[in-house]
Length: 439
Ligand SMILES: NC(=O)c1ccc[n+]([C@@H]2O[C@H](COP(=O)([O-])OP(=O)(O)OC[C@H]3O[C@@H](n4cnc5c(N)ncnc54)[C@H](O)[C@@H]3O)[C@@H](O)[C@H]2O)c1
Image (cartoon, rainbow, N blue to C red; front, side, top):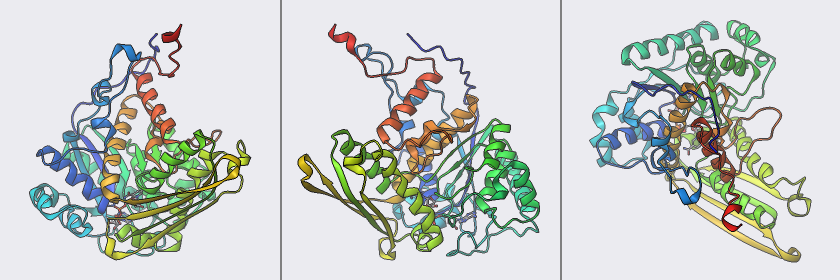
């Protein structure tokens, strides 16, 4: 029986604006990818919205449409991107400096990339200590800075004629901060903007400006932004979805593939050491202890939640988990990660697994940006507001309701995402029971 959901989804008409604070490696790889696809120069490999299918009904029915045909999504060619950055380089120059994509491809998309020029950023060096740049707004108060961003959003909409807009953070990782009294309520936060409260970060000003302007906000970095009572209150009041945080693209992606498998076979874990070398600007920012702390916290929690040591004390009570990131410029964006996993089996006999992942950070992250943008737009048109836990699939530290723990297991995350899509369309949820074939 189909599930009678009353979800009304407005059609994906017109252009979709994508506003991105931070125009570095991930953003330029994303934009160049959109332009390359338009010209038939590449395929959206890694994107669930573009290549993924969804099974509907029973296996015997043979119904597995593409996700993009099943739910009304904006098309990649309908996206119009606008960015902010502290550097003045246009997207072509920034892509060349990021060094992710090769020059012959970049030359073919030079014209549209050169047309993307960053708006002046709201920036505060106390939150990103390793960077400084000239393309920065000067504002007397944080409220003034937020108002300037609201004005940027208004002008972007007028200039481009987009019907709807999503904001997604691809800026640097900010220094680790926890929620402070200024984040307790929207009233406190607005008061703090006026009083230049030092606990309000630039990313929070962008998110505030977005939500105030009716724009959903997603956070691709690990720092705290919309995960505070103040900004969640604003999202709920404005009926807007929010999602985050920290793209699950490389080593943590691997971790959330392997750990559920070990647990499914009840194999024990005594230690997991992860390290990687990374030489891009993100690596440089993460070389600073405050920003690294944000990343470390985000990367550390996945294993603890997946392995549930309280439920499986014999297997996971005492495992040692260490995460390192080493800034090593020669590697640029071509990160190399090593995982040493000490496991044990029957009668406690030890074994080891080694993973050596030679990846490309932004090549892995760009399709996630596309999917998150398209699904956030879908969520908005479906009237879904607040934390979009069904998008946990994309994040290292998924936002979640206070009464539940975050779901990190990538297979459960994918099932949850697809069941949410089925629910939106009034299709039966899939339980994988299938007893009827053996009656
Ligand atoms: N690439 C991945 O696989 C991956 C995975 C998870 C998270 N992330 C996160 O995504 C973000 C982007 O990664 P990247 O590799 O593109 O980094 P990057 O350093 O190449 O780009 C970040 C850009 O943000 C700009 N910036 C910093 N503060 C800003 C501000 N307040 N306003 C506007 N611009 C600002 C910087 O000048 C820089 O150009 C980082 O926070 C990173 O940790 C990336």
